[in-house]
Length: 70
Image (cartoon, rainbow, N blue to C red; front, side, top):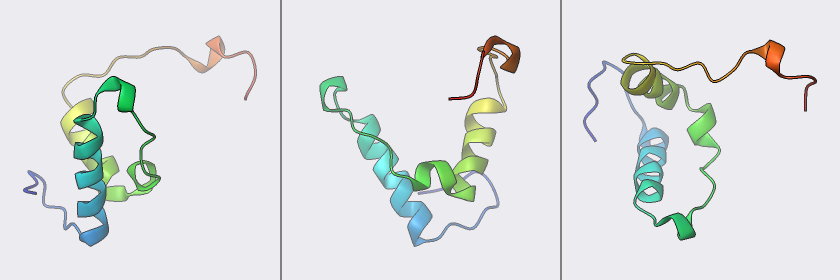
């Protein structure tokens, strides 16, 4: 998978990206949870920042709107 950034990917990152692509192709009725690495892999974080949040970001709330943790 070609990346627009200078990041070096490894086999684990490539596997996570492949899983994410497979999940995105599922019908809503077949939806499953994302793999843990989708939330912890630093390359995935960089890609999210670069490809999703760099163009546009929308605040959906603030910490003041949350009455208590949990």
